Structure formats: C-alpha cells, structure tokens
Image 1 (cartoon, rainbow, N blue to C red):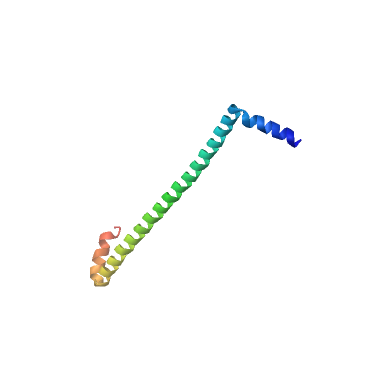
Image 2: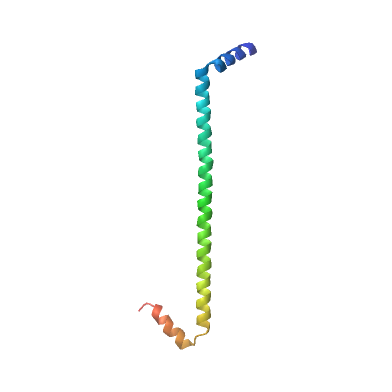
Length: 90
C-alpha cells in the first residue's frame, strides 16, 4: 500500500498541470491570509488614532475648564451671575 501511494504521489507531482493548479490554490490562500492580517493592522491603527484623538479632545476640554474655573474663582457673585445669565436659557 505504501508503494502504491508513493506511485500516485509521484504521478501527481510529475503532472505540471496539477502542480500549477495546486500552486495557484496555495498562492490564493496565502494572499487571502495576508489580506486578513493587513486588514486587522489597518483596523488596529484606526482604533489607535481614534483613541488618540479622543484623548487630545479630553485634554483640551480639561484645559478650557481649568481656565474657566480660574476665571470664576476670581469673580464676585454678581460678576458670576452676570456671566451666567449670558449662557442661561430664558
């Protein structure tokens, strides 16, 4: 049985058409796998960029809030009420 298997395997390997088909299938699988890996890397890079943008936005909002808090701390109650009425709904 082992000799028969080797004879069949030798016939398949010797057939150029079958080997070209096999090489094409293996190449296609390789491209599919490489595309999947590349897609995952792109998604990870996009996610990292989104997280960085969100962190930068939070930092900017914290800076603005700190500046507003410093300004509010230096105001009297009347001045704070005057500024607040500009932003309050009527």
